[in-house]
Length: 89
Image (cartoon, rainbow, N blue to C red; front, side, top):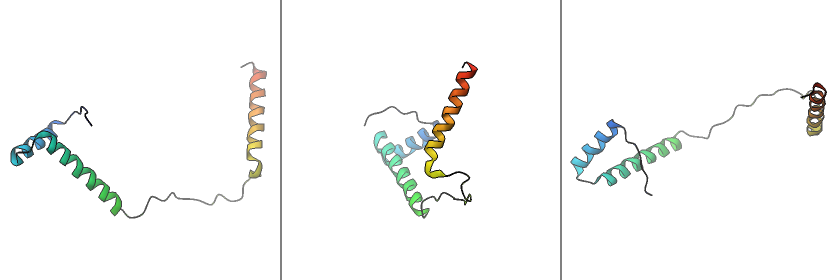
């Protein structure tokens, strides 16, 4: 894949230093650095253990019968729409 990236000055210094030390071309040094960084990040994610768990809370018994929640939502929407029409909006 060919793309244009903006490299921060401190990163450019590190790339240039590595190019001088290893004799490797810019493209290889950059690809190796990105590859190493992404693999390290992936490794840290795996070592973190288990996946994130969303906390849950008992909210008690529902105040309305939720088996017909969509009917209730429709009725509330109708009431709001009628109110807006009466107000001329």
